[in-house]
Each structure stands twice: as C-alpha cells, then as structure tokens.
Length: 188
Image 1 (cartoon, rainbow, N blue to C red):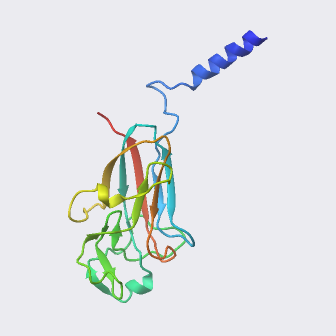
Image 2 (image 1 turned 135 degrees about the horizontal axis):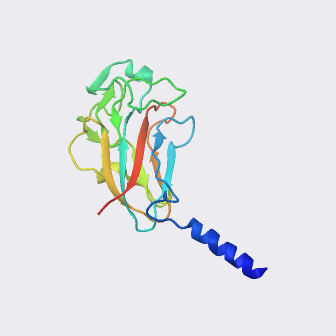
C-alpha cells in the first residue's frame, strides 16, 4: 500500500510541473488600481513575482485627485482631459489632470496651481515585496512630460512576493479614475 501511495504522489508531483507548453502556475493577468476609496489608501495587489525574475510593468491611465465640484471652478494650470481613460465604477467621473507619473492640470483653488505644469507627483507608488516597501513610480520613468497614451513601462525584479500599487496623497474619496497595470516577463 505504501509503494502505491508513493507512486501516486510522484505522478501528482510530475503533473504539477510546468513545461514550455503549459500555462505558468501564476499567470500575469492585468489588474487595476482604482484611485477612489471610501476609506483608507487606494491599493491594488497584483501577481507574485518570482524571486530574481525580470519583469516589465506597464501602468496606463488617468485619474483625478480633485472632486467634480473643484473642477467645476475652472482650471488654473495645464490642460485637463474630459474623463479618465478607465473610469472608477460606482462614482461619478469627470475631468482629470494626472496619470501614473505626472500632474498635467489642476482646478482653480488647488494648492498645485502655483506649480509649473507638468510636474512629477501624482502619488502613485509601487512595491515588489508585497507592500513592505514602496517607491514613487515616477522615479523610474524618464522624460520631461506625460506621453499621449499616459502609459509608462518600467523594469522590476521579483522578490517572491506580490506586486502592489497604491495611491497616496489627498482625500481618496474625492479621487476617481483607474490605472491599468500589466505585468509580463522580460525577454532577454
């Protein structure tokens, strides 16, 4: 009986191994960071990145740190877009002035009106160690202004823990707009 049990365990273990024709055990599905939250810091947890694995992380989309009422006062700086690329569900969405890296427009009355647009500082942070340590996403992106698609790609090295994104700063109940996050293995 014990040799039969040992054989069954070996067969099941062999079936659990992956080869080049099988789907990896942790498919890297796109996920969204919704910048709106009724309470707490808006956070999204993505896939587990294999220890020392090389990945490309693409974040795209636009969002707002200001309420619709603030946007209705007019724009003090920059050129807002009429709506987020990916709307937050269950809340009213309107004009936006941020993406994953840049603040490119602000409504009248904002403390950011005095700043020259665009500038880095949209409050998006990334963690490759399951949320233990976070870094400003924009520090990994080159350039001097937002690109037309509001899409940015960075390289990341896995730690055997989940990829986590969050939006800090401001009142999350005023925020709206989602950022689409896509993770794929880097090819050499």
